Image (cartoon, rainbow, N blue to C red; front, side, top):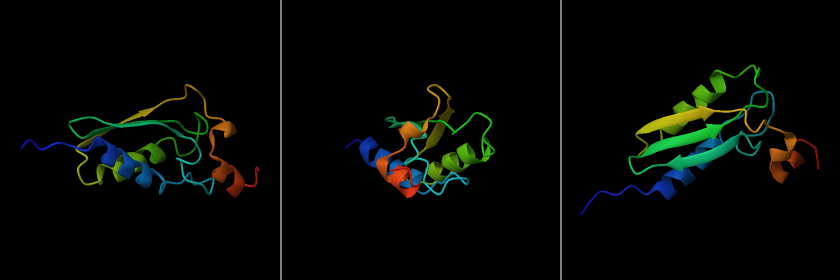
Length: 107
């Protein structure tokens, strides 16, 4: 029997890991902030993440993507991580979940 990769399980595990990564200036995880645009895992167990930052000149522009890449690479079954940083579309407060807005007193 062929060894198949359950991409949906790995994508779910990635989502859970992303909820442990926080923007140091905002006490909310980057997923709830709406900074994650895409999570995909291919049949070779390579994770593809598209994310943004709150601004292009964000003080954690180097460290935050590195933290995301490192944490995802430690998920059992993930073979490689391709992290794409984009500013299209630019991040806005509207991208935050209602829970994040509530946490920050915006609702």
